Image (cartoon, rainbow, N blue to C red; front, side):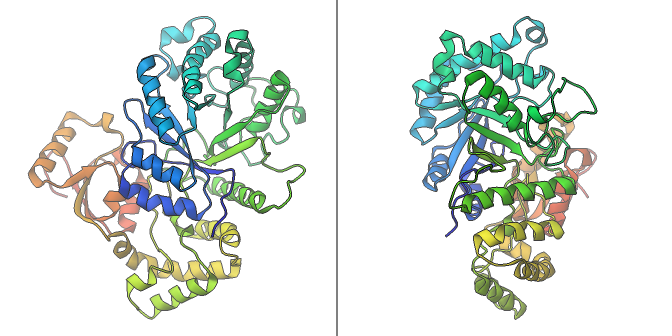
Length: 469
């Protein structure tokens, strides 16, 4: 049985297409296989995460962190928000994060951004809803600040603490968990390590200096919190491992980012198996959750004992039934919107990093598994994925707002004419033998096309001029 890594969490999808039973059936075993303890669930303002989804996640011992995408310029009605928090609390939720990145112009209307006392006005808004969370026995999480940002995040945090320490916000401050965007910001893993004391002085927006904008941002934020609160404050890390704010969910991260992510994952696993607390752990105990921005690779899942896994390879090589082989190892391709389907040296490194903690196997065995697995996966992958498949699926672009009226009409007419299944769920598309796309490469990231071809899906494109390839 895999021990949960107390600080290990992942970001789930930020759309509404993956809160269905099929997606959870697919991902929950994989999350459990790598010892996940936390799951960040982002949801658009007008929607709620389904009750059954939450109950299954919490029943599995995973703590959900809800991130409703509320607008600062158009916040929800207080009564509706209270009902929403009551609903989440009844379904096992304890943590909610509100109003991320308030130090960015894009979070405000132009007029509101220009007004005086921006931080004070934000804290007043945030506290109104944080107080409701506390009343509903939900812990509010202070919003993420964009490292650097349009309003320097260090200054924003300091001013926020100053405002929160006023008497009328005391109850908020005493029940608050802080957060940090621990993405790499295109820097090395040890960038900023040691906090402000190691690099004093550091100036806002100064180039050519080492600052807080990297994985070790938590040390800089904690220094500010400790100075203001006279104690260490609990903190949750988000977006851990993301290369930069411009790295979208489909993008292939640079090799350096993948290597650094592996090191963080190894650190979390190592700290989880320590019997005695470490004197100076790399990821300190005030970090209660470290959430990786990508879901775990499917190639890590269902690895059991060395003997069972060797038996799987032998069975496949002897051309035994696929159904028998799949019980020992589940060779599925990466089908998540936010997980790359590369299976070369990176996958080998990932498995090598985690396998010792999952099944006690060594790197030699891992290399053997990968070498053989790569040879057979392309021919078997579609069989394993299509236990319950659709004959055709119209994959609608995520950037639906960019569609022309003609393209929207193509989608409507084709779906009405053929009655084929449609949506933005890449998992469902990959489980279909035929996938229909709009004939506009700018609407689909290259990695999506790569995954469809990798999975041997037949691709048909539709243009405004005709319905042919």
